[in-house]
Amino acid sequence: MIVILKENHTPQQFDSLCGWLKAQKLDIQVNRGYRQTVLGLLGDTTQLDADLLRALEIVEDVKRVSEPYKKANRKFHPANTVITVGDAEIGGGEPVLIAGPCSVESREQILAIARLVKDAGAKLLRGGAFKPRTSPYDFQGMRAEGIELLLEAKKDTGLPIVTEIMDISQLPLFADVDVIQVGARNMQNFELLKELGRGDKPILLKRGLSSTVKELLMSAEYIMAGGNSKVILCERGIRTFETATRNTLDISVVPVLHELSHLPVIVDPSHATGVYRYVKPLAVAAIAAGADGLIIEVHNDPEHALCDGPQSLKPGAFAEVAELVRKITPFAVR
Image 1 (cartoon, rainbow, N blue to C red):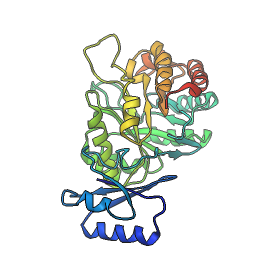
Image 2: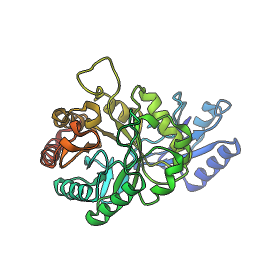
Image 3: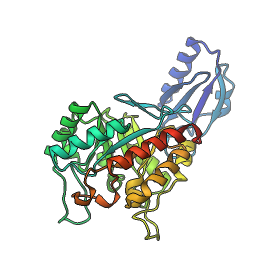
């Protein structure tokens, strides 16, 4: 349930209403906008009399929320959530570019790519230290050493780093990581999500391969229910009957998520397609649809990459994408 308050309410009225609601054993999420204050009520609201609440002098309106996701719901939080990471404001109106290799392979590789993507306009550096692979015989990442190299690249360039966690046991290694990525395979690893909810680091939550919008938002709810509201939703393609691309990029999910949730939404055209030639047009399409940013794989030698070379852009191609993003941003649907 949400309670919309009148503009001219007094602090005494506000405190009195909140005190009464807490006495009903409800948690209150307060969202103060430019003109309106909205109270999101969490708990068993079935016994609350909506007409009684509407009759109070302080109350403008009362609405029941049927969706199971509450904290992620735009009805509870009408204003867009903006997550600040370094110099980037994700959800702040200007698309944020996150770029880097699928996996960290060496010191020379990650430092070179970090410098190049920064020069092209990237605001965050991505790179995999732990790599979930379909085959147990494929390269699994440099693990702890990979995170150390990412941190060295951060020190060298000033770019905050984004890297994927696979298990709760790895969490101590992520103490200095700026954004923790939860991959598609772990989107419904609820124990991991609950643990990440107890922290305060931004979480980049990727949509599962066969997950619905509701399932993605419920996974975000797991994190937010623990107290961490810094969640970035990421569309990375879903599994369909089509085989021409690695996955099918669901561009429609961008406006859908913006309508349903206040959380920022970014798009990963690299994993969606699996083919570097399609990354540029889909990146542009995502920005035009209103995405708050892109996460793109960039490698200086994709032909010899240890992971996902076929979908990685060379630095020059990434610079072209960054320039196109700058040009199309004023025309994006928001």
